[in-house]
Length: 171
Image 1 (cartoon, rainbow, N blue to C red):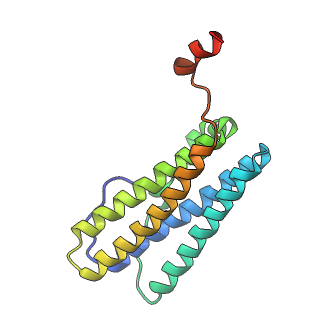
Image 2 (image 1 turned 180 degrees about the horizontal axis):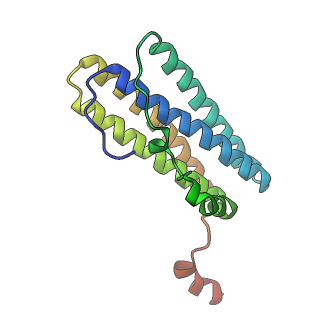
């Protein structure tokens, strides 16, 4: 997502929020399917709930921005995982090796970046309405962050060779 640029208008903020929320919904659904295929129904169900929440946010943002001329953005700039064609094999390998902990960690990082992005947008806003919009988005992101933090605490983290090997062989 990079650093927040100074938005001069609500349409710019709405466009960025929509791009971020679309990506989140897409990835949550994708991760849910992956974990369902790997037999982790509990984490998959949580990810589907998060996807549904993101889709509701998209709908609300679309309603609120109806009639505004939203700028076109490059959606790839908001991607959680690089989808560029040269990285297709790497992308599939990441998905093949992904654990529930990994999926939640990726989601947590993305939600934290989104919250930080809109926190900065709000801090830089010269318009009170734009600052309120950014604050609302941050509040919703923080709700998502809390849910993901709770979930990540319940799933086992993956084995880390450098950190876990000695403990593993010393048993």
